[in-house]
Image (cartoon, rainbow, N blue to C red; front, side, top):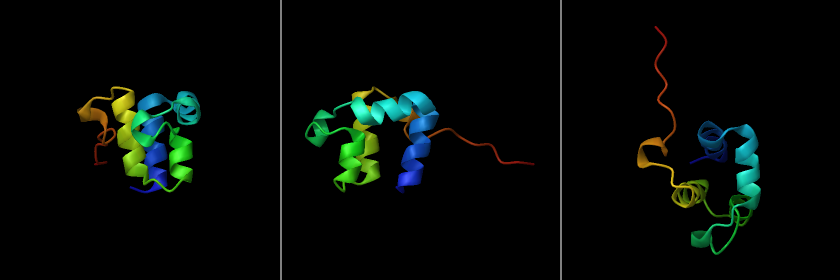
Length: 73
C-alpha cells in the first residue's frame, strides 16, 4: 500500500480533521506503542499501520479496503 492510499483510507474512514489527530495521538499497542505517524516515520509499511489502526479503532472488516466507487456511465 502506498502512503497516499493510506491517507485516503484514513480520511474516508475517520474524516479529515479526526484522521490527522488520530495519527498523531493514538498509540498503537501492536506497533510498540507508536502512533501511526511515528510508525510510518520508523519505516513500518503503511498497510501494517493501517491494519493496526483499524484493529485499535474497531473498524469492521467490510470497511478496511475503503469505499466502493461506482464506475461512471
